[in-house]
Amino acid sequence: MFGQYGVLYFKYVTTAYTIHDNAATSGMFNKENIINLLEIFQQATIGREISSSLLQKAKSLYFYQFILAGAFRSFIKGNFGDAKRILQLFKINEIKKLSPPVKWLPVYLVLQLILFPFKPLKLGLPN
Image (cartoon, rainbow, N blue to C red; front, side, top):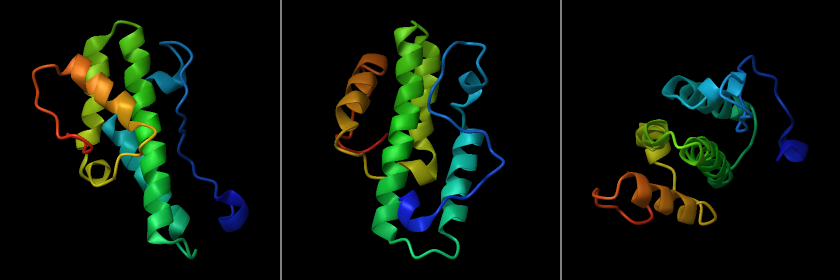
C-alpha cells in the first residue's frame, strides 16, 4: 500500500506490539488510541485515490490484529479483566462497522467464548 500511495508522518505513537507492563505500548489498548488510529486512516486518504474497499480491508485487518493482540497478551498473562476490557473496543461504532477478517475470526471467537462464556455470540460480527 505504501509503495502505491506513499507514507505520511503523524505525531501519534502507535504500535501493536508490547514487551512488558511498563512499556509505552501497554497503555495503547484504549478508546482514545483507537480514535487516534481511525483519524490516521482518515488523514491518509486525503488527496489520494484509495478505493473504499481497499481502505475498509486495511482498517479491518489492522484493527482486528491490534485489538486481538492486546487482548491475547493480557489473557496469556492471566489478566482476564484487562483482556475483556480490550475486547470491548470492538464496540466502538467505527470498529463495529468493520467486517471481521477471516484470518482473525477464529482468534476473535475463541477469546469471546473463553472470556464471555454466557454471552450469546453473533457469529462473524463483533459484539
